[in-house]
Image (cartoon, rainbow, N blue to C red; front, side, top):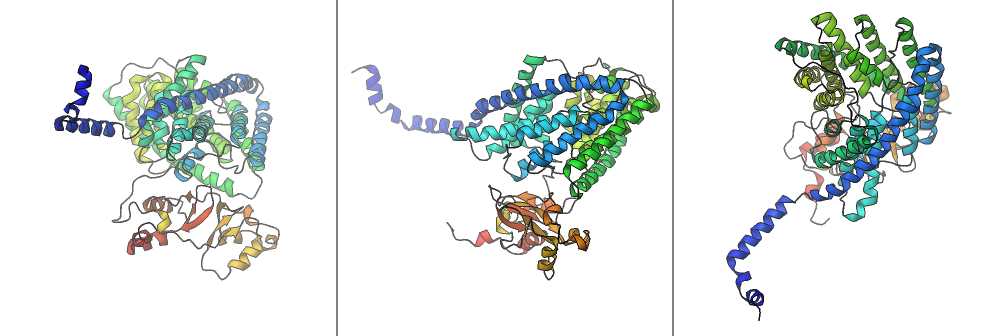
Length: 589
């Protein structure tokens, strides 16, 4: 018998001390790898590569092939601005109205809504149509940039990849993480800024917190996506400029003052934008007509500016070239003020009417222009690039409730790393003074006062299971007659066994009575109604109901979108007084 055999046959391996330490090692390894993070070493790079390739193609197509050729035409033939934008917005409207199920759902907002309400699931059927609508919105000169389709494209790719890789051991909750990781990869690629992509993606869902659970996959996906793009178009910063190498203590004071001022301006703009967007959504006209009106108003903003200030600066399109001018070329304060004002107006009309993209760069650029004005006219400083960087960070922090993203973004895409501290001060002040106002209607507050015994209670245990719903194709006359004696004033609306929104009695009263026979509920339905799953925490539901827009009810739907019930503030308050129903269930019921 060999020595090894004698050892194995002996009682050495069964020694109590060895068994004890073996158990401890197993316990430590189980704790170390309890989150099963190894899967992200394989999944996240796939998300990064796929997103990086698609966003690279989108970037080259828009910036070089389309806008790179259209901008010189606009600058040399100003009258072309109006027909150019009208045609582009007309095509966008037709695509969104006839090729997507909900023309008002797209870009960053769709990703945030999917994260909160649909477990990270994205409908991929209109995917390419929505990217095409983004190309026509931005490429014709709409005041927006590439981050909207990039975040949407990356998020949708991450969500879709989950359906293909689920069989390899992915959990259902991983779809939300892959959604956020894809969004991070899209942001990292389009701005050549992997850290910005990571930070924005985990800041994006909430106004006051981070989606911590998506940190690792978002980090890997962002780096890989950036590397994919950099290998094709190069790694240079998008808006590189020389920048100052130092700042004085008084610059920090001025940075705080600038942040406070721009925070107030951003607050006014975001509130106005949300109102205009809601008005456009509820307007009783075809979606295409809304876009055509928005395109006309946007074009007038651009035409007005180039008429007053002829040159190479115009508040239209992706405006990457305008960022470089604001950072490196001296401009009169009057020109920059008018530019900033018309840029915000053009953004309001482009995106408020339903244009497909987002306003990250418009906010960034407006802040830079006003920061430059602040340096010239208030501080009388030659270091205008420092205050331009602070203004950029302040506008993003206040507009998107993303102060960390704002500072990281300024540092990465401009190369102005020496501006981090002043930018951080300005961003913090802007974020604080702007309150809860946000350009995103789907961003949520993560923290709220906890009531004893309510945290962890799912909505399904307090919701109303018996609901009175309204069919979308029902006429207003039928609706008025059937609900006349009903005590409620808001009702859920269904179509093909799916919740599509809500309708209120006062919405019907706004329509002339002689049109009630020919008008349907579909024409006045409120598509902003919030949908949650039955597993949604009661405290999260309460936060949604007491937000600034004061929702009357939440629609509770299953994973397939089927109606399960509704929940109101009354239902939740009632649960504070009585034990939730799940506490009275028998085990296994």
